[in-house]
Image 1 (cartoon, rainbow, N blue to C red):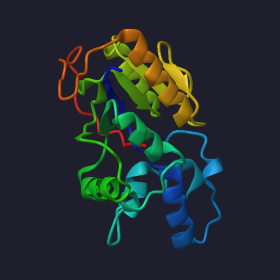
Image 2 (cartoon, rainbow, N blue to C red; image 1 turned 60 degrees about the horizontal axis):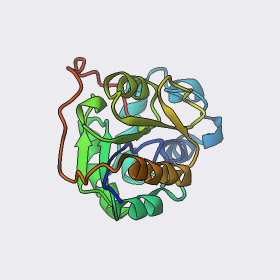
Image 3 (cartoon, rainbow, N blue to C red; image 1 turned 135 degrees about the vertical axis):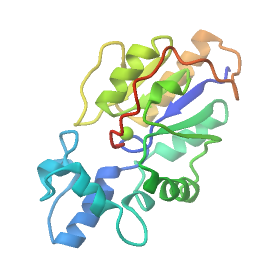
Length: 211
Ligand SMILES: [Mg+2]
């Protein structure tokens, strides 16, 4: 079995960001939102009283820890990553505001996410991986166009849509099955620790909030 570099997004893939912020929002404002109500990107501007994402983030970071400190994990996510990490290299590729990084690192440790590489970047294609798992529409587009040599997977969520050249993955089990099939097909030598050059220059850093 070959070792592949698996570029794994966090929010919307491993961490249930919507369940996390909605729990806090209901508590703070007496609302009755449910994660199933999230069907669009930047949903807080649709579902809450916050008129823009800046206002939302200002609330989400306040207190002794931010919303990113205690997000629940999606079922099967960490267990599947543990299984994959026995053979492959799990590379966390996450976009985060600076204020969220320490909470995210604490969360990764607490959840025992089996990664030995963590990248906080806005420009995700700048991190070379063989396979990517991502939910954000803009990141899927960027990865598909600039990492054409890689397999880009969309974690199917209500807030994203099919992207040309991107494989749809509906569950963690489906992702694990795909990775093992790819490893068998490619026979790629173990790449642990290697980092290929980016496919091309990235756009200027654009702080699109991670989700
Ligand atoms: Mg995400």
